Amino acid sequence: MTESNPDIEISRRRLLGTVGAAGAAGLALGATGGVLAHAAIADTDGSGPAAALGATEIDFHGEHQAGITTPLQAKGHVLAFDLAPGAGRKEVVALMRRWSDSARRLMAGETAGAADSGIALDAGPCSLTITFGFGRSFFDRTGLTARRPTALDPLPEFSADRLDPQRGEGDLWVQIGADDALVAFHALRTLQKDAGEAARVRWQMNGFNRTPGATAEPMTARNLLGQIDGTGNPKPSEADFDKRIFVPGAGPGPAEHAWMAAGSYAVVRRIRMLFDDWDKQSLTKQEQVIGRKKADGAPLTGGTETTKLDLDKFGGDGKPVIPSNAHARISAPAQNGGAAMLRRPFSFHDGIGSDGTPDAGLLFICWQADPMRGFVPVQRKLDRGDALSDFIRHEASGLYAVPRGPRTEEYVGQPLLEG
Image (cartoon, rainbow, N blue to C red; front, side, top):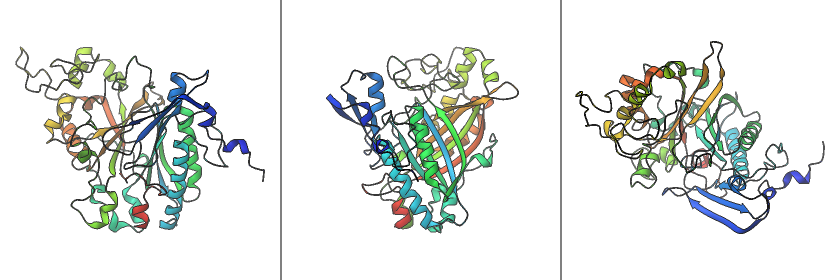
């Protein structure tokens, strides 16, 4: 066995340089509490926008896990693990301790320990977030069936689904996001090694978004169809945001499910986009399919991106200006009894198929306090008549219970596994 290299123990954050007179500024993201970003600007010749971006740190500890209300990152990995045969609660406790310790270290810009691969040594935290969740099958595997929330009941089948079961569900779920691809891969590789003999990867998907700073001013992301995507997201500043996105601290349901208080439920869908069909449509047709202008995301009824949809406005032809089957109309909360979810997706591109079409689209991830009141009613309505359905295909699906953020000295999921 070789001796450990003391240089490998140096914090990646220190390699950015000493924090100078600029200091560290804290930015609380939303009114939910928990996620805290620290922008530490190095006072060196290399400091500037790039150095500032690399030094942004997201707190591992908090009321909610990071990666839910955190701003979209440039690079993401989403994956699920299945527990190894014979692995039970004891092995899971040890695994969640290892994963939580690694996540805490890496999100703080530190190395993963003596066995660190060195992939990201010369980078800062780069807004790294690591989020953990539990699938429905996890509770049977660990003898915790009585503590499985009813919100984890299987999602209904939708007529347009073409799901590959090998690329969905799973016992354990992990979401990784960062503003640097090497930092994100470093986290992915670290967690895979940490899994050891306790769990094996069931599926893994890679995603991306526009890099922060690529536009003149911050703006809503675009998807690979070229549409501004996420305008209607609930905002943390809204009075009912927490109620919609996070499980209440006290409420209906058996005491066995109380461990999910302040947690959230993630629905994950791999949605392939049919680009050849989409690109054949005129700009006018594309905008009618979505119900918004492609250039700026404004409703077809006028205004700016944030202008409320006027669903009762008719054109000179007597037809609704926003067509009855437009995606924006059908998915609007006003059309779904107020149902809302926080959409936080990544785009993906997994190469060009043998037929010459891109295997690309959206890694759709949405967050809600109850998927039966968030994702399901909206998807049911989209399934019955969304014009966008002709240009997309749902190929994989998963639903996961994501517990609250860990307290200091606590690992993720501890109230469930030891409560």
